[in-house]
Structures are given as C-alpha cells and as structure tokens.
Length: 359
Image (cartoon, rainbow, N blue to C red; front, side):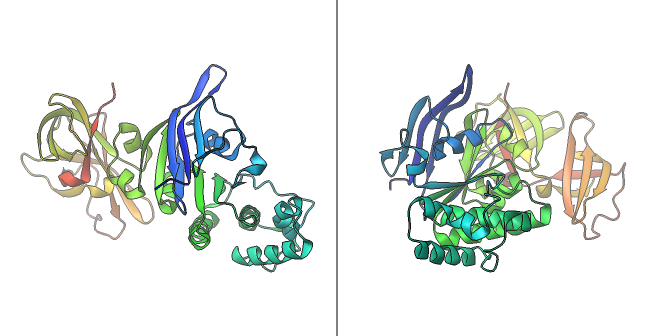
C-alpha cells in the first residue's frame, strides 16, 4: 500500500554542515508517528521540510505519489502546531480558530459553524470570546490544535507542542492528543526529545541521531530490543555491560565479561564470535537474590527512594566503573536491603539485548 507521505533519501545542509543524511521516512494514513531525538539531531529540520518551511538538497518529498518539494506552504495539505502556539493575541479564540477559513474566502456563516464544531471537539466550546492572554497554557494549546484541524488537513505536524507545560498538564494533554488523533482519523507527525512522551503517544517511533535514522519501530519494540548502544542509553534507562561474544545458540548469546559469563538475546544475525559486544538490560528486569557461589554477585552501594519506585545501585568488584541499577516498586519488599550487602544479580536472557559495541 502506498504511504500517505514518503521522505525519500532526504539530505539537507546548512553551509558546510550536513544536518540530514539520507533520511527515509514513511507516514501511513491515520498514524501517530513520533520523530524522537536529542537536541541537534535533525528532527525539527525534518518537520520543517515536511511543512515547507525548509527546502531540501537531495531526495524527494512524496505525498500520495506526488512530489511536494516545489509546492508552497499554503498549498500543502498539512497544518503545523508550533511549540509557542503562534496565536494572534489581538484576536479572540473563535477568530484565531477560524482564521484559516477566512483567508480561504469561506462564507461567514460556514466559518462560524465550523469554529463552533471544532471548539466543541477540543473541549473549548464556551471560550470562543476569550483572548489568548485569558487562557491557561493547556487551553492555548487546544486553540492551536483547533486552528490546525479546522481546515481538515490530511496530516498535522506538531513541533514539541507540550514542552512548555507543567508535568500534570503535560500528562493531561498527552491523553487528549492521542484521543483527538483517534477521533479525527488524521495522521500526526509529532516531534519531541522526551522519551516517555514518545512511548506513551506513538503508534511508531523514529529515533534520529546526528542526521540519520538510528532505529524505528513500535514503542515496545524499541524499548525491549534496542539495536545500538545509543538507543539503549537514550530510550529509557539501561545497564550496559561490556564483553566478548563467546557463542550463540539460537538467538541466545553467551558473553564473556570481566564479571563472568552473561547471557542476552540477539535480534537478527549475530556478530562473529570474538566481537566486542554489550549486554543491555533494563533496571526493572533484574532479579535480586541472596549471594550464591558461581553467580554474578554485586554489593549494594546506595538505595534511593523515588516515590513510586526504589532505585538500588550495586557494584561488582570486576566492574569498578559500572553501577548496576535495579528498580523495584516502593512496596516494602526492599526494606531489609542496606549498603554493603552482597546480592546475586540475574535476569532472563530474553530480557537482555545483545548490542555490537561501537569503537
């Protein structure tokens, strides 16, 4: 099936700096796609290229099989919600929302009816006469969304729209955004540097690093099966233990480390035996038990209360530069742990990912 949108081998330079290098992204109809990456990764440049705010130096921007590279902003079937909302402060809410229809020359009665309908959709039906300065941050965000959807675009671009909100309001808006996208049946391309936000909202995540796509897939796939050390460290928290690949049986790999043999699961072809690798295991997947001979035994360094969770940090004598982090619910089960205690650390091979170490 032809994708709704296809960024095909896109490259972009600013002077001598290459900010995008061979980017290939597809967006399906009705999909909530998140482009995730740290500052300077190129994610906002991708959004600006889709929206028509930036040109490209190479590649094609295809929408339903038609090249949009030379199509101006006002003729692209997309709308953008910016980080600062970009509302007109001299216009009230209804005027802001209806502005796009007004410049298209739609009849006044049609504009009024559509504005009323869209404001009800975003939960602002009673606030049409207010001005932006009279609204909360979350309400201004909803006005920006209403203005984006009123012209019935095929795709909405969202440039870190929740970054200015406080934690509680941000969580509320995340739930609202996902619900709105499902109700409207419109494709959303969402830009963020917030890993938890990307996991919570997305049907699919594309992680961008240094102008290239590092990995893409469903949130659970990226979280459980990172393919590179960058993904393992960037998307959530991971314990990374260096070693050498000793052998492979099926998808389970045996890794020799300074602390002894460890096991992990590889996705796809395994590297050659003798390769430098990393075992990546999430803190919540590690089990703790009484110290036992022949096991991976580490000493508790610190126990931190984090509200709903407890973070336990341990160190193995053969891994002096590596803190092994374990997360547990703060339900009293860790009450007897104390610094200096020696514990066996373990995990299921399926809960650990094998990564090729970068030189």
